Length: 103
DNA sequence: GGTCTGACTAGGT
DNA sequence: AACCTAGCCAGAC
Image: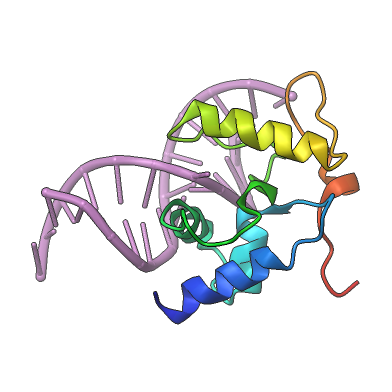
């Protein structure tokens, strides 16, 4: 595993309970702004890492289209269990629930 | 080593 | 607000 992936994982581990972060946000924090896709890839190849992967969502506040719909369902449950609310279209209010590091 | 794919995003329409 | 497009770059083949 390379250093960038480790940074990505470390950042995700820092997302506090009850908050979410976007792929692009994590990419920027990991020093690879504009490379949100790589964050998605890092997650995809991270099964086994001890990560709150479910706190990572896309920039529109939605659970991304995942390879496995059951995983998306699980993600929805886990977030709800932390007190994060979804609107009737399945979207999270980012201005309310997005993690604001160092602020 | 060229091409294609995709847990994405910002910007334009 | 929804849809389209170009840009993105690590893996898979």
